[in-house]
Amino acid sequence: MAVWLAEIGTSTGLQANVHGQVLDGQGEVLAGLYVCGNDMASIMQGTYPGPGTTLGPALVFGYRIAMHAAGRPVPID
Ligand SMILES: Cc1cc2nc3c(=O)[nH]c(=O)nc-3n(C[C@H](O)[C@H](O)[C@H](O)COP(=O)(O)OP(=O)(O)OC[C@H]3O[C@@H](n4cnc5c(N)ncnc54)[C@H](O)[C@@H]3O)c2cc1C
Image (cartoon, rainbow, N blue to C red):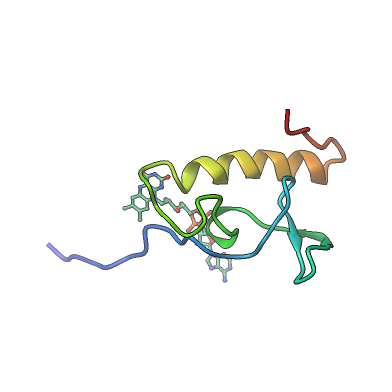
């Protein structure tokens, strides 16, 4: 059986706000640019405490980004 090495997930990436909008070095929104999944800086801040750490945020932010891009942003609370 062939065994291939692969990445399970990354913990750092582009900084984003609660809507998945990418932020520049000054914390300002880069209009029209969104990020989620492994390309987004992990809310776990560089750690991988357990299963779901990557897929959970990817699903949540995928939804939040779609809603924001459609002009229906989802509030935090
Ligand atoms: C074996 C394994 C087990 C895992 N188990 C868990 C778990 O239990 N829980 C958990 O939370 N996470 C788990 N993960 C991690 C999780 O699967 C990943 O972190 C997650 O899928 C990353 O999603 P993503 O959308 O960022 O990237 P991906 O799912 O990698 O999607 C990237 C997509 O971009 C495409 N692509 C790449 N380059 C290009 C290009 N140039 N042009 C167009 N398309 C391109 C790829 O084909 C791919 O479809 C596991 C990962 C592995 C490998």
